[in-house]
Amino acid sequence: MSILSLLVCLMFIAIPVDPVGSPAIDAGPGGVLWDGRLYEFGRLVKSADPFDGDAWLRITDASTHAEIATYLYDGGNDETFIYFAILADDVFTLVTETRGIPGSGGSSLRKTEILTFTRDGSYLDRAGVPGLMTGYNNHGHLLVLSKDDAHAADYVFDASLAETTLPEELAAEGSFAYQYRGFATIDGADVDQILIEEPGIYELTVSDGEYVYRACVTVDPLIAGVIAGGTYDEGVTITAKGVLSIDGAPYASGDVFAMPGNHELAIAGENGYRKTLSFVIRPYVANIADDFQTTDAIRIFSNASALMIDEAPYAAGDPYRIPGRHVLTVYAANGYLRTIAFAILPSAAGVEDGGVYEGGVTIALNGTAVLGGIGVAGTLAVTDPGTYELVLYFDGEPYRTVSFTIVAAPVPMSWWEAFPFVEVLSGACAVVGLFLIFRKK
Image 1: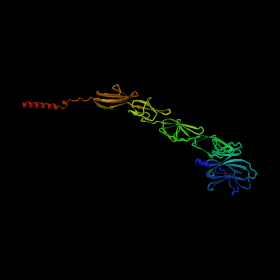
Image 2: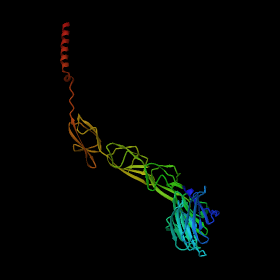
Image 3: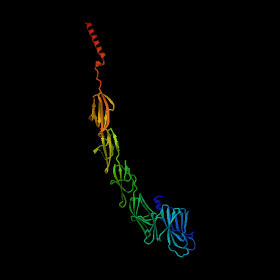
Image 4: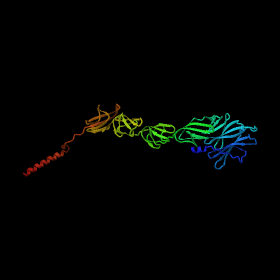
């Protein structure tokens, strides 16, 4: 059943019981319409003695008039169901007054009892009330009894028939619905039902006759999309009732909010109500993670408001290749700060461990290194034949050793060394030429 339906069903309507056809039934206080059912209650006179009666209840379907249940309570004297109250969505109670003893010739209040039933009329429990009561009220699913004309809440019972007290402050999240009998005001204005759906602080009064109950009601909004202290990696969509703002700027419920940083959501409501919660949207940081290590240059991408590496500004997307241990600091709105430690390891390009190179090799170093006991850096060419050890250092300690060998390049041969037969052929050609010359002469 919805809250609104329940509130409508809880409106008490005095419906007189027609005793025609049931001459033994004392109409008593009448009846109550609740959730489509008519609850008639009062007293059944068992004999000609007007002080010999049993408390009586009949439940009928309000639309079909079909009888659902009847109940008689005989406490040994003259009993009457005098008051009907709702104690839960499916539990009601009837106050029983014992006013006389058969044959006594008189009637006076002797005791008060409370009987509880299910909505369908099944008996649940019974409890006695200390002292003699003069007034009854029902609100907030509680039965309130007054023992004198001061109309105070002298005794309060819940659905389990346990004694309790009336709260001076009430609170609800999302909306506040309150069952009551009689009349009600919210902030001094008369209302037909108590249903508050906007966040705020309200003054509630319930009155019935001389009885008055007052309470302060706080309605907190239901907030979807963020939680207090929540951290989010992407934008958030927040929905809530009330007047919303983020970091002091107006925010429309249901809009996407994606600014990285620390934020405060504030919700304002009626009568000075204000609720705040903090949340964090972390900026994305791509191509790097905590304790990340690489031998290559890195490009870091982020939507943070600022980035720094080792306290020096860094522009997102720029290559960064300085070897060593580094700290990336990520900044975002309202003091957000995150640090990421990473390392760029030393490297040597152009040479491989165990490599053999003819005539020499060119090495491009990124970091600190020692070659043959001599510190080297940048780009260097090694041409002298021999075996070498290149030691790369990281954190002041040897990190990697690259061993390689340079062999002498072979000496290029002359043309005649490469082709000796050409010289012989040339000589023969010269002799033949001379012979031909002398022959002509």
